[in-house]
Length: 241
Image 1: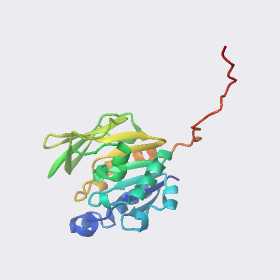
Image 2: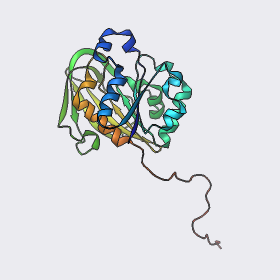
Image 3: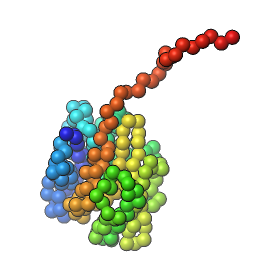
Image 4: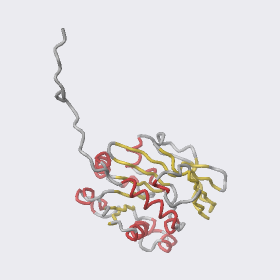
């Protein structure tokens, strides 16, 4: 069974009654709940737990880590970020959600500022599937329509993705690369844009399907660790005259 940890800073839920009303168990609880329904072994972790809930034991028992953050990126320990970074390089999958684009771990893995345009105006978002053969959008039609979402607009300051799976259009006219894949070391990364805290986006069945598909896609690959460094020759090297 695939082992998933859903991390959330869990600050909006404490400060904003509207967010608590939409996500009474927290954003992390809502995501973990539908993942459990899909037969994943899903647990949660939050910012204010010791080591942000991401101890060595938790990380070592996590196949895919989901990350939601917004208000408190700077409060995340650099030590924990370094451990997550190494786990991704070693093969752990990482799914970065919505405002997690400004998280320390995503910026570290991307090597860029990850900035973008944004606007809160209750506007329609349509996420177009632009890579229909990709497993992350299995079971999704041509597009996903969200009645209200926060706008993110280009230019998104990230390195060129390995694949752009979903592209958003917003009622105000902007577009955005909303579903992007990357590989770092042996790990697979998926950035997925929707999920502003004051909208019930994570209750949308199609959004849940994309996240569930992404968890399956990002799972570690069973393989031998490559040998690096100074190496003995595989064949005899004949002396050269």
